[in-house]
Image (cartoon, rainbow over all chains, first blue to last red; front, top):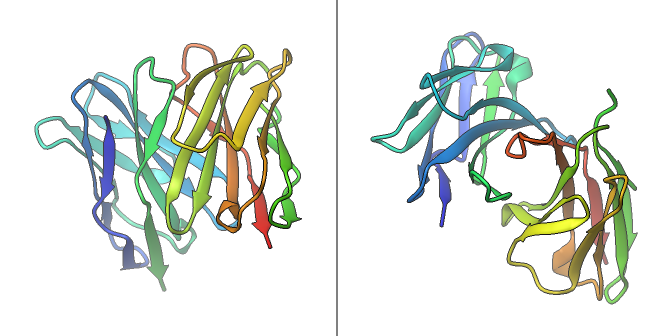
Length: 113
Length: 113
């Protein structure tokens, strides 16, 4: 079975500072990895995904993530955050052909002025 | 293209009642997944449908059921509502061949009194 652990439930950061949201996964088979963002009272929006190929994945809104197979991690980074990045971020994993996505518990990013 | 739409957006029911939620996927998408989101349990997978067939389901009691119609629209039903069923129910659709990449609707907020 697959599982996802988001290591921080909340991350406060000042505007224009860099941020890293950590995600570790567990799986005995190859997986696809995703980061989603959820703004208040909205559904989830896909930020980026890793399916194969380059381990550094660039997404929308200036976010990027790096797949590290040996450490089973998929941390999300942004070099300079904005107030508008305040939201909840979810790391997720799925198995090819499994038709099921497992989400982490979420990390609440709070950007302060 | 229009995004995933869910109706109704808000719903209040009492214990013991049943409820039906509706989801219209993005045009051309044939895979629809449902999730339950609560503060305590996070995002939990309910089931996934493709071409009117359920391909996978999560660990929910039989009170939770779903179906998909020939136009890919999907409904989920919860019978004999319990207080713990209060949650945001999210629907996501995926394009063919990219079922792991999901586009979420805004959700239906169900409150059980």
